Length: 470
Image (cartoon, rainbow, N blue to C red; front, side, top):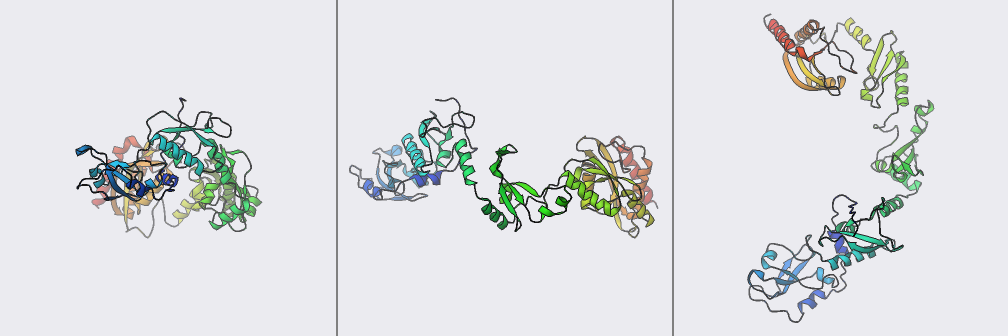
C-alpha cells in the first residue's frame, strides 16, 4: 500500500442523504418475504411477532430473534426502507429490545450504521455509476484500516489503467464518506469547475445586470490568460461600465476604462468600478482628486508625504493661497473637507475662537481630562490633555489622529466650558517643554511625555482646587 495519505477536503461531507440515493428499491416485496422466511422462531409473549418500531426513514418490524436468552437476546428486525434493497441488505438487523425502546436504530436509517466492507464496495460502484459515463473511477483499494466512515479509498483511472493521483503526483486517497458525498480528485475537480464556469459572456452580462453588479449597458468578458494572482483565470472577468468607461478619470488618463473582478465578487452583487462606494482608487486617481480640489482652493500641489494605499494613513504636502505650507491627511481632505489648518486657526481667532474656545457656549457643561495613550506601531507612551463636550466622539478622533490606543484616564473633571478651557490652556503652557516625539505624527501642543504623568495630574488637581475657591 502507498505511504502517502491525503485528505483533499477539510472536514467530512454529510453523505447520509446521498447514500439513500444509492439504495435500489427494486424488490418492493422484500420485507414481506423476509417476514415469511422459513425457520423464524416464534417470539415469547414479551416480544410478540409483528411489533413495529419507528425509524427516521420508515419502521422496523420484529420477525424473530437470535435464539439466545437474557441480556444476550436480540430481536430480528426487517426495515421497510433498507430491505427494499436485497443486494445491499441481505440479512435481518438485530438489536436488543432496550435499545429499540431508547430509539437506537440498528439499520441504515440512522446516521451511525456500521457498514461492512462488501457494502461499502457496492456503494462505491453505485456512486461511480450514478456520476455517469464521464466518471473514470474504478475502485482500487481501502487503506488497510478498520472498515468505518474514517477509512480511505483509492481508485484506478479505467481509461488508462493508472492510479488516480493529486496535482503533485502522490496517490489520491479520499475519505469513504466524502467520496459517497460527491467529492472528486483535485485534478478532475479543477477541470469540472472550469467546465461549469464556461458560461458565455452574454449570459454573464445579463446575470450581473440582474443582481446589480453591473449597470444596464455594461459588458462582461472572460479573461483568456492562464493565471492571474496565482489562480486560474476562469475565476476572473473584465468589466466595462457604461458610466466609468468615459468618466473624468479616463478623460484625464489616470484611471482605467475596463475593470478586472473576481466572479465570486460580482456574483455577490459587488460592483468592480468607480460606481462602487468600496472602489479601491489608485495613487494616480487619488492625486487627480486632490489636485481637482486644490484648484478650487487656489492651492498648489507639492507631492506625497506618505502614500500607503489607504486614504486614512496617507498624507500629502501643499501650499494654500495664503502661502501656508500644509501637511494634510488624504481622507480628511477628500471626505471631510479639511483644508489649511493655519487659515482655519486665524479665522477662528478673528471670530473670538481660539484653541477650542467657543464663544456663546461659555456657560455650558464641558469635560477636561488627562489620558494615557500608547502609539500602536512604536509602543511609545504619551499623555494627552483635552476637553470635549462629546468625550466619546473625541476619543475616536484621537485614536485616528495619533494612531494610538487608550491605556487609562489619569484625571478628569467637569465644569463650565470657559473653566475647562482655562485649565487645559494652563496645563499646556506649564509643560510646553515636555512634548513627546511620535514617529509619523505631527507634533501637538496637547501631548506630553509619559514620565511626567504624576506632575501633570497634581498640577491639574491644583488648578481645579483654585477654581473651586473662586
